[in-house]
Image 1 (cartoon, one colour):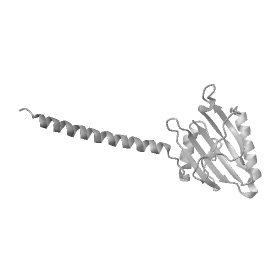
Image 2 (cartoon, one colour):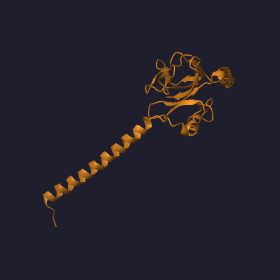
Image 3 (cartoon, helix red, strand yellow):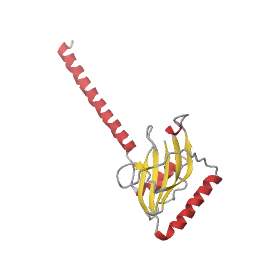
Length: 184
């Protein structure tokens, strides 16, 4: 039995519609995956899990093993495509513990030097992803930077196109400490 031309055109149209519908659903699913990849995680209850991921990359060993009670902000952005992996933990320093915190920073710096961790003096200043403003911005100049590791992985004129660094920043006036690690 031969099919009429009209039947063939109808069947092809239905098949094309179903194929287009399936393709659009896959594109939507891909878009949702991309969105998840760029969405920062700020749920501090996931701190230990995410810290383990970053430590597996060889970074963030100076971060506390568990989120301290004085933690006031947290940000983890997963490495996705060409984007950076970012881990930051902001803590309020109790008034009577500033000296202890500075001793902790000195200990971390000594450990980094003893481990022969490279600190490139041309490293860019970290951005502040934990600030409650909702905007990413350069780390405020009130912070004293203590780089523990900084190495460019780019090429020639674009040496910091790719790189990684980690450290601690201290704002003594506001008694804030920021642990940071990033790879891009």
